[in-house]
Length: 354
Ligand SMILES: Nc1ncnc2c1ncn2[C@@H]1O[C@H](COP(=O)(O)OP(=O)(O)O)[C@@H](O)[C@H]1O
Ligand SMILES: [Mg+2]
Image (cartoon, rainbow, N blue to C red; front, side):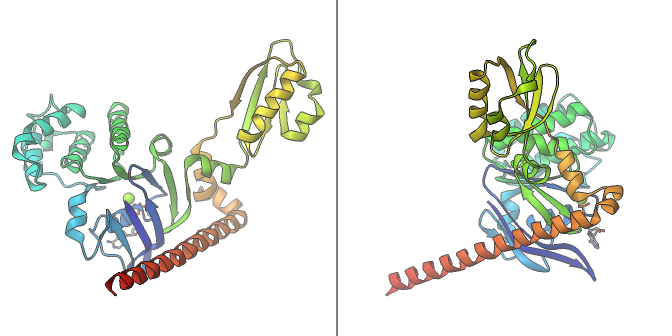
């Protein structure tokens, strides 16, 4: 649904976005994570046909963002970072106006705007002027505006940044709902909890470049190593003499009175064996649980804090250059495959013409 290839934006002599390539499938949520100034907003502005790329191209629902900008704009909803709202208008008039601009049929316009005002808890305050709204209420109004024509693709630039916890939850729930309806979402956020809850795919961006991308689980596995599990045994059972074949199977990392932890690269393969060994050796297993790992540790490891950036510069630069090379290789292969495919299609077309 979204395809960006070598997207680059230069402002004067400053490279804000550098060679960003990514794909987002229909029904997926992609989170762009990165510090302030990383290039998230500039990337989404290029994807939503607001800003022309200096180099590279992007397609949304098959439409090119430069040559078919109008079609792109019709297919998308965009909640910008600093949405301009008409503060003298009431929300009802405002949404009705935008529903008309976006060609929402007259018969359904009123019910659609009412439904959305109720969904985002703005129904009771619909008689106030937008200028009298709080920051969070204005952000919700702008979000409804982005959703009013039920677009296939949504760009949400820090959608909950000004909201209280209750409103943030409403917005997160609505993003989950959009996902169920097979909508495609690009979410720029600083909020790692939000990214972890909603995103199928995460791209961490720094200084205009994607450093690493993948599913949250995939990123954790790649950056934090093999997952760790805790086995809780029946109260009286001590894990002092675990069977040798168990220790050969997984790396036991810690233990206590009635528990032990281990690391395991392929749990789907090894956990059933481990359980069998424990049962055969007379242990009563109460639970086996994966130790939760946060996206925050992944983010800090890769995007860095000022302190860790200095301490671990060499290590992280090495990891990063390896990751970048891997990504480039992957895209090179993909471009080759696509070039071959195009040649094949062209040959087929020529054949058909003949
Ligand atoms: N129109 C512009 N002119 C010049 N520099 C810009 C412009 N827009 C963004 N930048 C610069 O590009 C960099 C990336 O900005 P942005 O995409 O807004 O980052 P993010 O959304 O990740 O915080 C920043 O250093 C910002 O100052
Ligand atoms: Mg931004």
